[in-house]
Length: 373
Image (cartoon, rainbow, N blue to C red; front, side, top):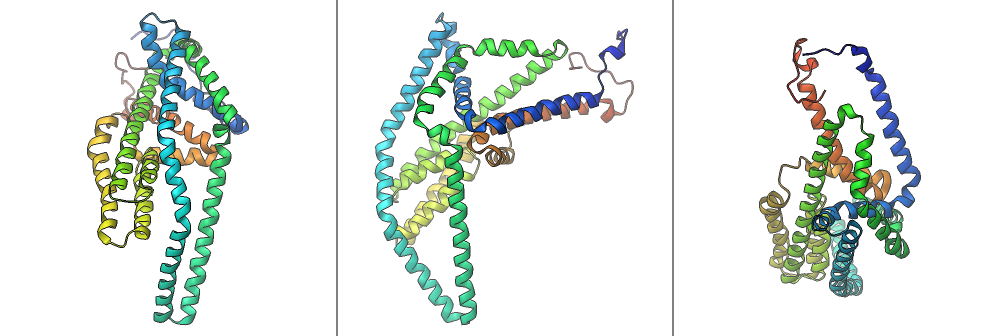
């Protein structure tokens, strides 16, 4: 092995590297915190451009100009989205209207059930204990309503830029078009900024991050769509009112592992207790989610997502909740890319550590050919 004539020229103190990365990450976090209220349409546009880029590349390979490919792909995406909304909106509107009309009746039935429980408690417990139970239940219900209201308010505020009609209609498509049109040039510019000595390593890790993120999001989105249809049709088939809406929401929330099925099970079984008098009907509703979980765990997730992506469900859940807590809806959009990048970089760091002299304890250990410096 030929040694560098001036090894000190290539040595950078470790503390300086850590300090540089600390400054970069800190600057990014400060930027996100300062501009989180206006970044949402740009992040949504970036996400749209990222996932439509393969389609634009396919058209470009067939001699379609890049600007025309970007335009055609975005128009097709917008028409597809609009068609789904037009087809689903009447059914969702009908079910929400029916739910609003049925809520007073359900509330009355729940109140009668609670009165029966309180009457039973007052007959079997001392009067002081029964009173304390009433006060405790009332306090917990009040806290639950307060927390739910705060959550809804937080979601509404953080997603305000998304649901704002003018922002969604004009800013996001424009951002998506320009990013999609200039995607390859942007990647080339970023690649030109990487120090030449570590270009192969950075390109390799960026490719792994891209494969991990795309594999998880596209696969999990397919799982969510299929589960939403299965839950919606299944709950409607067993006669549950508003079953289609509950099923669709459970399918959407299935993007967060296990959250969708737990939400759908509790809500649908709760509605079944209010609507049905027969225990078999309630069991049928619960069976829809049990079958859905078996289908997801044994067929959909292994086939559409697979285990090769390296994003553990616990890591995904933590990333989504942490991003939502820090930056609201914007944080949830950024959580998966960050989680994918951190996961890939951590695996790379562990692999480098296992090949290092620190782990092996051999001062004469040589790096294998092709290993990153």
